[in-house]
Image 1 (cartoon, rainbow, N blue to C red):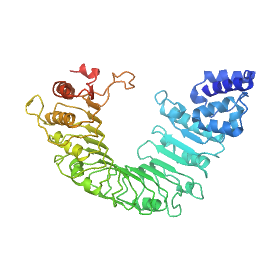
Image 2: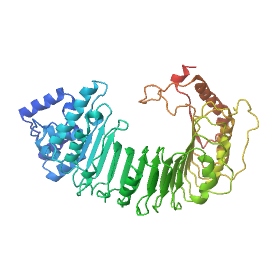
Image 3: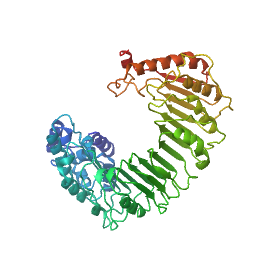
Amino acid sequence: MGMLNLMRLMSVKRRRRQVQVPHDGLIALRAKRKCSPCQQDGDSQGAADIEIPDLPEDIWRLIHSLMPMRAAARAACVSRSFLSSWRCHPNLNFSSEAFGLNRNACGKEELAGLFYSKVDHILKRHSGIGVKKLTIKVYSDYSGKGSSYLNNWLQIAVKPGIEELIISLTQFQAKYNFPCSLLSNGSGDSIQYLHLSNCSFHPTVTLGGLRSLTRLYLCCVRITENELSCFLSHSLALEQLEIRYCDRIVCLKVPCLLQRLISLKVFGCDNLKLIENEAPNVSIFAFQGDKTQLKLGETLQMKSLCMVRSGYVYHARAELPSIKPNLESLAIKSFKETAFAPKLCSKFLCLRHLSIALIGFFPAYDYLSLASYIHAAPSLETFYLNVMQRYVQNVSIFAHPADLRSIREEQHHSLKSVRVTSFISVKSLVELTCHILESTTSLECLTLDASQTGFRCDTPGSKIGKCPPLDRDIIMEGHRGVLAIRRYIQPRVPSTVKLNVLEPCSCHSTEL
């Protein structure tokens, strides 16, 4: 109703008289307040004539198009001035969140009926013309209704001129076959972003590609490598490609025809054996997997690299400076490291942001060896380290408090912010932190998070109900980490550096 108040205020200022709402309009408004918000969406019957500022119709259409779908539907319910523009509303978002449906308030069958009736109700009152963005998120509670509903909705809303199409079926491996014919005959020529989740997608040669497509996102989609290769080779405007958990792809070949492709991300495709990239301008690459062979082609233009791969902390320090010398951002997550980061002369001359996560149960790790990364990157500004390792036999600072190791290196003059998550009392981690403090002249902020969860439910304004339960040994290690910080690190912090220490949440203290 905030939009209506705004219109009334504008009308007073422009026309110097109060907005007049007919008596039947007041009755309609009162009736709307008594019903639930979900029952209002798309219902335009009983609309009241509300006097609004004398602006050009195209201005009001623009204002209406910028409103969220639910608010736009409500405005159309109470003003015939907005009713015509509602029939061409460009942004349609069909999800339980958009409708305000509470999945816990009623049974699955009732929820399914509400969702489908609402979508049908809205689309019957929509001309299907002018849709720029269509989002359909069908949850597992009612994705089993069959493909006929989805196909009917797509037939109405997917017309020439649509720019974004998001179909997200959250039921894993939902049995829905996306109708590729829907994108033929010019209907898909304007699509710039295509997002498909948990469905089958089988593009053919007759479909070709989408001439305006710049972003393609596929998650848990059943598509073969040949189908994908054919589709990509005809999508010459593509700039961003992201593929997640598509297990039917064994070999991913990115053709050299994709001259505009700058971002390639592949996660969790378990059967993928090879990625062969021939696109010449990929500058952002992200990948998760241990067994896949990577042939990334020309890598001098690579600016950002994110790798979730065992053993990659060692590999990256040993090989990346020579093969990807222009990296500006590097993020590594490793679940297994058999060797420490080597100390080498090679440099990351352009690297400004570094993130390393050592997560898992692998043997004790010498965190001080990571200083090799810092001093190899003279332009480094931020360093983030996550050491969420459980039950490893690292040497505690309290067992051997004497003889802290130090490394003779040149002073670092660029590093400004350092954050260590899941801080523990491991001696080599204390040594690394002390080394950073002593060798960095530019440091402004040091955050040491010993909460062991990465968040706290007792933080003011937190929306988290309660932190997840942790084993007693993990909670105790968090408190030992805080003690190590206070005793061995805090006294070394210069006055120019802001130290933030995040202790374990109070809800975990009660479990000791």
